[in-house]
Length: 208
Image 1 (cartoon, one colour):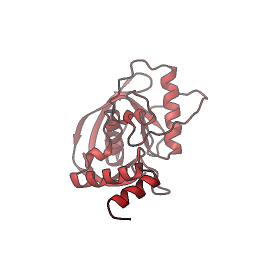
Image 2 (image 1 turned 45 degrees about the horizontal axis):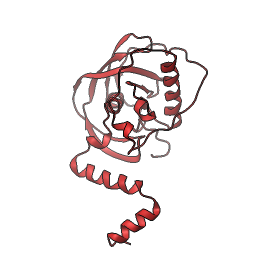
Image 3 (image 1 turned 60 degrees about the vertical axis):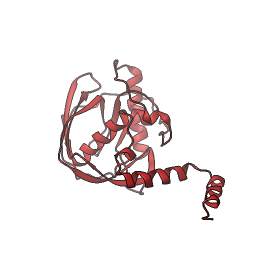
Image 4 (image 1 turned 180 degrees about the vertical axis):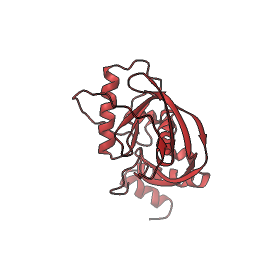
């Protein structure tokens, strides 16, 4: 992570995005606030596909509130439920206009192309230029159970795609080209080693 530049589940926070969004008042939440630990690479929960939210009850409202608090503390501009170990199809986001949530979201249309330096709170400290569609249409429901359609491009469109990937059990390293992926896996495996294990590995490879 680069100090002073919050990320969306890894993306740098940048307010140059353009989007058309149906604005709505964020529903009042309970006073209870508790942040989660963000799951990182290697946790099997990040590879699981989420289930739709069938009932918007008190537990869902509490989850959303806690996820927003966790996202703000990270800091990031997006967070999917799987990143806090919950297998529900919802994510929260905030690129500067206040927090919002999308339940049961799916991208139904996309077009264009945009390369952006992308990272992830679940793969901390690492960033790669990743090509994704520039414009997307996201469909889902809000916390009132109302159907919503959100058109977004650039940063916000990237946030939507990144978070939907999480809900489908996909990490950003799977969006890398073969060379980038090989390099990423090498770094991630190295980070997973203890200092003693890393010393032993380097000796075996003749590099220390």
